[in-house]
Image (tube, rainbow, N blue to C red; front, side, top):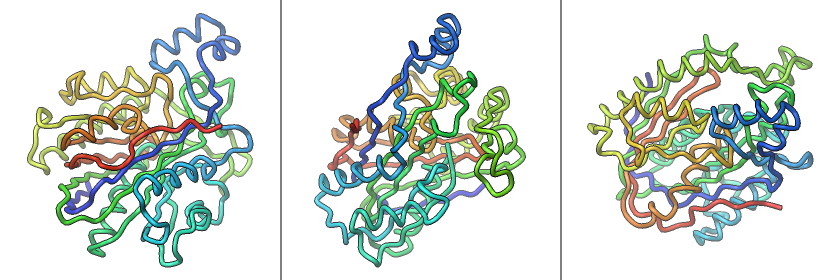
Length: 337
């Protein structure tokens, strides 16, 4: 496992953006039948998902969120030193979506901007990259974009994937601050799991291949096998117990998996954040979206200790314990027309 303890990285704000159109249980009923639609909603806990219009790409969601975040913080565009975009559904194969956003936001030419092609674990990997780079510079500000337009990768008739995934983009503002609390990160990979959650279509290996495929049984088994160990290792490195964590924010895959995982790691119902009922599985966006949906007011009230864990496609997983001071910047979710 790869572990890091990084001091001095402050969370300044999170703004998430969702496309306005939605699909709910009634849409599933028309495609799969009422009984099957209700069974899916009960098993997954997902009753509604936001779906991007055909003319909307990731940057179309991320751009207004980033502008709102910069305005809410009072940050000048040229004060941002780093922009990382975590996505598996970029606007184009090239150039990087980060370059498009750097230009659209008017960030300075000194700003380092690049994409990272990770899914469910991507937000934790993004945090690790931002924290490492800012700590290495000993100064600076960063925007971390995490989001996916997963709906465009799906077979609408595949009941194992179509009812689960929604679209979203999130933007997190981070800043180097020597007084900020510690960020502890634990990362892992097992590429043997690649065939069980894969989209071959559009790549160089198989450009005309099939849409997204997911073996739910294998995903569930991987999650319960690896994630509790990673969480235990992260807590041990941080010198903490689960009882000392204020909020547990896991990748919002499905409700049954989250509740089972919560039991295995010893998280209480008060600690465990569930935010997927009206959002679905939003891949790399799910952790920051859950924070902006559910924790904005709480983070503003008092210092908090968060346990974050993302896991899935790859197999790839990442866990973080983050000690945060009271959040003074914006933390909210936008619905875009």
